[in-house]
Image (tube, rainbow, N blue to C red; front, side):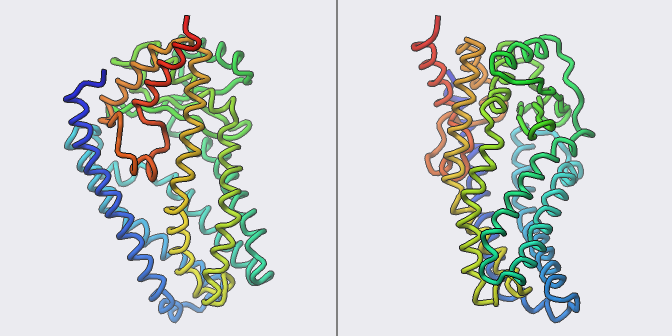
Length: 360
């Protein structure tokens, strides 16, 4: 189905990505450990007060994270160009995500200043309201991001897809969800679509590569139904709920870990806090990815229920594998730490299972 030669090429391509990811994570943790031990020395250069100094240390730490990741991201971009996964030049690549990067940077800085203020006011009891702050900022970010992308997307005017959307929205019990188009075909042959936003900011975005061969109208409708299913299942609000469940013990661990530096109310705790957060993110990845895979599988099943077209789900997975050089059955450890979706082989198996159970 996927083709032996295509699978071999996909595995060669992805093997480099796995090694790059491992090296990037190890390097990041080592650099953050050094910064946690030595970063306090930068306090001597600041007279901005405890919170101001903490903000400066936090911003410096975030800059270090970006710089550490940059060569590994550049290596991935080089590899993508070598395998013709992307044609984006290096200058455009460096600047392509500055808007979202700035938003993330501001969100983290806002969380830091609020947490430091809470810690100075409440002492060791800051962690519970601090977790609420983390969730509130993540919710705000999820709501606002679709509006930040207005300049990079435009309304999708494909009459077949917009007509199918009205039908699927009715079947899924949804109101109107705007469809947007992001033009990436000049830079890559990869295809993607995603659902994001909350309430009035809910959107579904198609990459324009999905509108061209080898993707058929059935493939496109399957993608559309899948993304609308995310909205009908409230996966984005549920994801925030899961984030809250992780944020509460995470904030408590952060409080306990920084006690030796005087707690989060003191600037010298900030470099250590960045290391702790990085470790927590890595440790939580298997559970978070498992949740994500469950949601993606639910969206696939709902898409089958409204399209009644398991053959299109199967051909879509094959086409996605060829365009993105995706291994249909990757190593188990990569699914544990990196797998936000079921494997392509598992998604094809779901199409077969649906056909046997509900197919006509």
